[in-house]
Length: 319
Image (tube, rainbow, N blue to C red; front, side, top):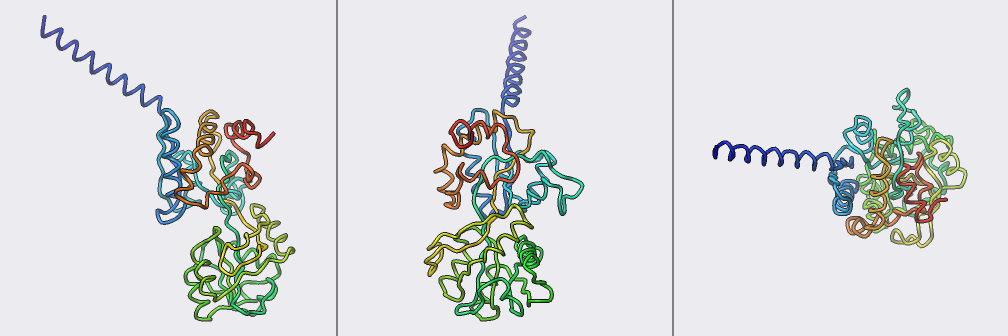
């Protein structure tokens, strides 16, 4: 009898422990965050966000996942392998079913938080007489690495302004570091690149004094924003780069935190609230997130998630 009771109690304890673990697992909210490469901005910021959520929201189990960037992030979100993703302007095409997403629109995409802008930098060799996009005809122009988002954007910009990138200019497919070297070696006349404020390659170019920023003329801005509606007029603030004493007229797309309508409203509310309340924890990882502000909601080009919207209404950011 004693042995039977001992075994029974042991069985009961094991069963209780299993039930407890099962209940704990079912109560947990698992959030996979699609970010980018470990050497970029997305991944470390995503890891910081996961830490904020895990420490602020009961039962939250968030984890930053290193990925190839926006295209892969959208695929992960679509397959249910990520609940929240970092995204550049490509999400606009996914939502609208355009380009590579034709016939497979992701209409359930929802916005959570605006992150930071990535303006197009219009660089010309120091002392150049290039004043506008139209002056690029016949010039040697860095248009971004082959197949990059920069190349796609730059080609669209040029075509929208009457320049055939395959005929009217000598296009050089250079990444930003190679563009900096090409300016230093006087192998290019101009460069168009997309990147966050203070991006290292442009800082190097400005510091060396091999090139300078030019304003985009209003018509060029208008034409690109019509072609790519996720781009909006944007001023590069004065003194962002060495020798740049005045704001520079440009246009920018915004990196945003995206989810879909499968994320429940309360979770979305708590996640949005926690990010703003612990914003300094994010800034400690990257100062680019200084622009993570409700006033920049206008740059999100998909519907705001109802849970996030509840928070924005609560703080008076939207009516």
